[in-house]
Amino acid sequence: MIYYLSHLILSMISAIGFGIIFNAPRKALFHCGVVGMAGWFVYIVMIDSGVDVVHAAFSGAFIVAIIGHIMAKRNKTPIIVYIVAGIIPLVPGGTAYDAMRHVASNDYSNAIPLAMKAFIIASSIAMGLVFAEVLVQFILKITKELQSRKNPTI
Image (cartoon, rainbow, N blue to C red; front, side, top):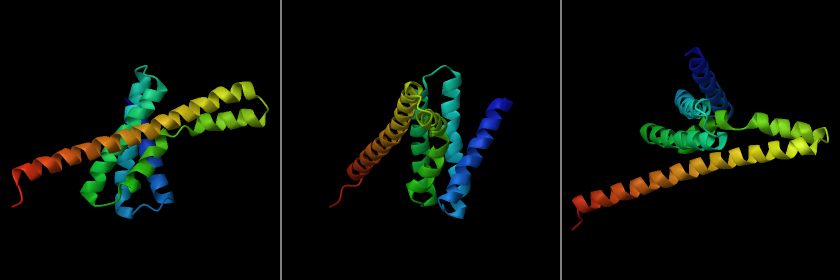
């Protein structure tokens, strides 16, 4: 329990911190933290359940984008405010750092797998964001179409 609580608190703090760095509106900072915390929670629960890191990163990014859309709509703020700050906990910075450390040491045999892992995780994060955006646009289109059928214009 304390393990998950510490992950939730620290991921929220990191998302809020990057929200401050990226000049997110003051009123949106808490919501940025909630978005980052939700994405990280999905990620860490999946990792602890034995799911591959790529699938966990995709799912975390998907949740970040979905909740970011909800927050943006609710608070009338651009979605980028929530997604940029919320995605930060998922970024594979440690893996990328290790890859570059091995490159600097001329240890290419260890650097290449780490760089590929960081690239694949980053790609899965991007795909999670894109898939969520496509899903939201699809739902909005269907909702708009259903409303136009209910209230036909004369």
